[in-house]
Length: 136
Image 1 (tube, rainbow, N blue to C red):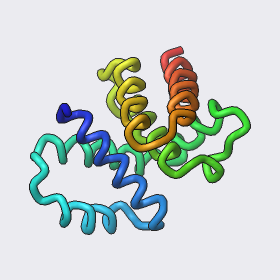
Image 2: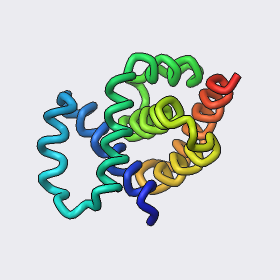
Image 3: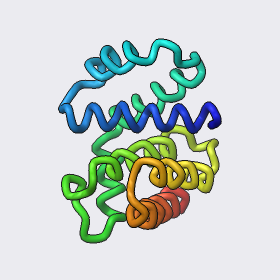
């Protein structure tokens, strides 16, 4: 697995912990990295960057997701799917040099690993729509 994919998976796990545990970013960082002291510096750095953008821009990110997820509110989405979307939209917003297709493909690969087959289609549709909106 590439370092960027590992970072994206770690960012997803951090977002999931913050979301379900109702924890602050600092609380998540404090506990999350205690269990993962052998993570390479560049992997951890990009995971932290994605997590920071996702937390700093939560309102904007959630608004984009809800606008492009027809008939779905954030709280009704599966927690894993919601946080895969948040991480991917954070990357689209915070790292515009990463091609949109790469961000979407990476999110889909992570969804295949952590979510259901139906979720992969849902995530693909939402991210494709968000990505087009951001580039128009």
